[in-house]
Image (cartoon, rainbow, N blue to C red; front, side, top):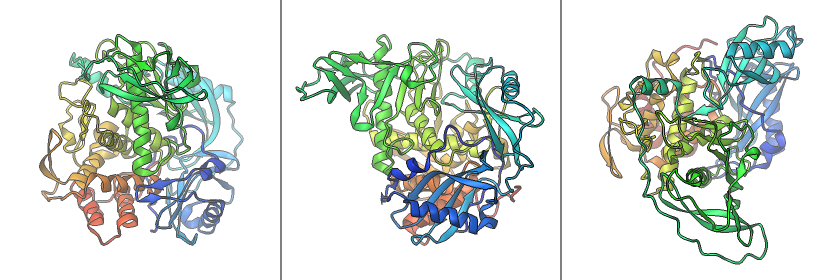
Length: 590
């Protein structure tokens, strides 16, 4: 492959710290077609050498160094090393790239976020950190936190800048973090980008409030959990079998940690110590600051929000189910592939009607509802699957919006792919979990109690009238709000998996159209998931747009199933059916 070199501008890149080379190389990465081998130091060394030797293709300059973010070896033998850059020791925002090698470490190509050269006249800022923090806080009307000198490469040229983390502000969701980028020479605010991914967008909240709508959640059956069978432990801590009564998912079996003869903690040692804690109505920044949930019976919740532990049961079930999904389907061992289970903080903040993935916390944050539009904790299963998938995306391609408005709404095709793939894998997790109290489907947010019976859906995205989601690509996608724009790739995925036309899956009726009137015959959800996951983790970067996503999924299909087979041809048909074709690919601008 010659490389899926992307060209569209994007907002600031890496959220959170870049994984060290040691971390990236110590974990075994995989695809559902068989476990990958950990990419050893020789692979990374070969990728670095290739990046320098093919500088015209990779865009790496003499003053740049490459920091490993991720590395994978496919079952078929190809190797992929994802790098972020530093220019004269200063981290580069938006300069991410993936170097592809063959089975003998020979250079195959590069996928990169920007085409322009990364270079600035000087790395000596004219503003101090304190001055930049003050400008960022004033711009975002919040409180400045961590400030870092960076080279911002996202706007068509490289600029020396400060990247400031800001919390609060009258327009911000409670608990939300933003990165404000300030030109280190002029003091101009270049960009503001959300660092936390919220399930309910500012646009949707405004639409619901304008219509006076109140969500009435569809909860599961209310049951008191049965007493689990107790086993004498040889020593503590020990793995234990508990039960829980959830708000949305019925009566559940939970794996917990027994810390004494009559003491249990809501932590799952079999899934990387995945744990749910109580934020106690505070906007905590660290998971460790949450209160550990313990009891003496190993029975949790009563199935309603009247017991604050019930929301924790849903959250724990959601984070462990998502852990299981990524591990069993793709061989991915945790959100960042380091073996660690996700964390969750329930009862986050005061009257927070949302749920977030927070990369700074490395955990899920669940509000209890705002008391107006959303009156229950947002702990539904597919909400968790969607949000934790944002964590996986952040650890891989890390898609960034092209712009963010004053209300916090995000725009652009890379941001739309972020929302779409979170929907795709969130739905996939629901299918894999297959809970009869929460039957799997291609709908997102169907338990939230919205009048249209779902928030988004993959078969015909335009049925989502609240967000104005679209079915097909057009030039408006360049600057469309990301939830509205997500329908393009979500629809392509559904067509690849299930095909066009009418069908009933489970108890849900679907009728998926095509932009060109064509008939698409699906290849099955399992194969479609493998193709989209392979594309995400190998061939997509922070600025990937829909046409580049098409190329990435075609390459992924060729890797797994061959370029002459039904799978490859159906990928092409599915994208054409949403009006994304080779013929209408926009010309590169950067």
